[in-house]
Length: 214
Image 1 (cartoon, rainbow, N blue to C red):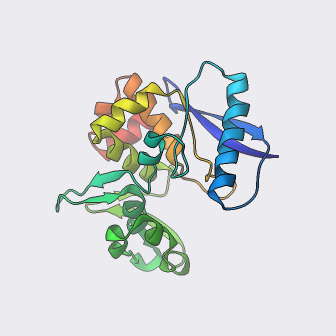
Image 2: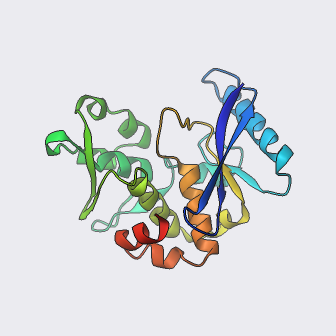
Image 3: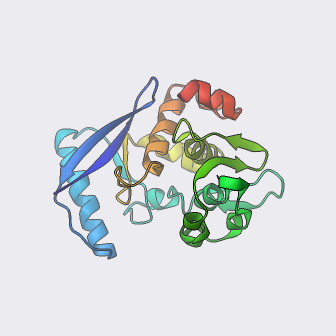
């Protein structure tokens, strides 16, 4: 058995409710095993919440929208060049390590390569984030990731409208014991802000986002 979180939008701060769900877990890295785990997690959650519409957000999702919303695939428009890069590559390239080390070349690498770049694990402690002219502290812990993901989604109007059809979100790859940032959680916050009619204000600037969300 294993536990994984399901993220449910809320209409007030912190704009997301986490429900940990226990289900039969199938170990392994194959796509088949991932799909079995997604099905098991969703079945267990929906048994107690039959009226909620649940979406897996990852490259393993069985729903095209869930695949498009993966941070590996969701793209953000760069402020100066007008080029598009993945949220994942933007996130990894924004990390600032001790001594001010930042690997901006990761911005244009494929998502998987950017995430697995060995320099990210060999450069000491993480000190902050810098995305072009925007600088973010490490606290609140998911502040920068949530801001980046939600801003990217906000500007993809078709995806932003489609995600509002769902009431809860999962990411089968995410393990709370090992990671902090989760695309399913960020998606739930986006839906909450949109339904509360706060999303336009929240994406005005990073200080406004911090004030509203946290």
